[in-house]
Amino acid sequence: MRRDAVANRERIIDTAEVYFAENGLDAPMHALASAAKVGTGTLYRNFASQEELWRALYARHIALFDEIAERALEIESGWEAIQVIVDGTAQIMIDRRIVAEVMRRLAKVDPDYRPTDRWVSTLQTVAQRAVEEGMARPDLTVADLSAAPLMLSAVQTAAPENRGWLARRMRTLLLDGMRAHPHEPSPLADLPPDFYERGASIVKSLP
Image 1 (tube, rainbow, N blue to C red):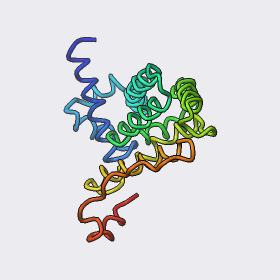
Image 2 (image 1 turned 90 degrees about the vertical axis):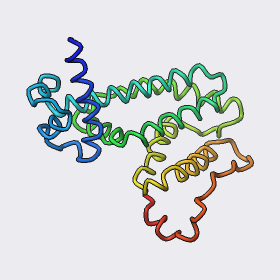
Image 3 (image 1 turned 60 degrees about the horizontal axis):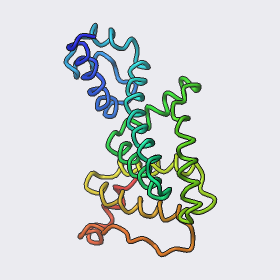
Image 4 (image 1 turned 120 degrees about the horizontal axis):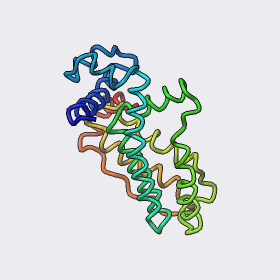
C-alpha cells in the first residue's frame, strides 16, 4: 500500500475506536468518514462494511493482548505473571472503552472467530506456576483470569474522577481473592480525601 493509503487506513481505525465508543457500533459509516476526514469512497475501499472495521479494531486489540501474554510467559514467577496479565489487560479495556463491545459483537455475528483461544495455554501455564509456588489458590482457573479484565474494566462507567482510585482498590481486592489462603490482606489504595463528605454522589457514580 502507498504511504498515504496506509495513513488513511490507520486514521480510520483510530477514529473508529473513539467514534464507536461514543456512538455505538451501529453508528452510520458516513459520519465516521467525516470524523476521520476521509471521503466515503476511501472509507469503503478500506472497509467494505462495519463488520470489517470491527475486525480491524479487534485485531489491533488482540495484538496488544498478545504482547502482554508473551511478556507474562517470560516471567519466572507465576504470581508475578498473573499480575502482569491482570494489570495489562484491564488497563487496555479501561483505556479503550470499545474493546469489550467489539468482542461481544463479533462473538455474536461470527461465533467461530475466536482469536482469544490462543491465550488459553498461556493462562493455564501461569496459573499452574502460581499454584505450584503456593501463591495462588489451588482452584484458580483460566476462566477466572479471563474474567478479571472484564470485571475491572467496569470502572470506566464511573465518573472520570473516581475511576483511578476505584480501579486500584478493585484490582487489589480481586488479586487477593486469587491468592492462596490464608494470607494477610494487601493494603488498599487510599480513598479520595473528600470521600465521606460527598459519599452519596460518589456511590451514585459507580457502575
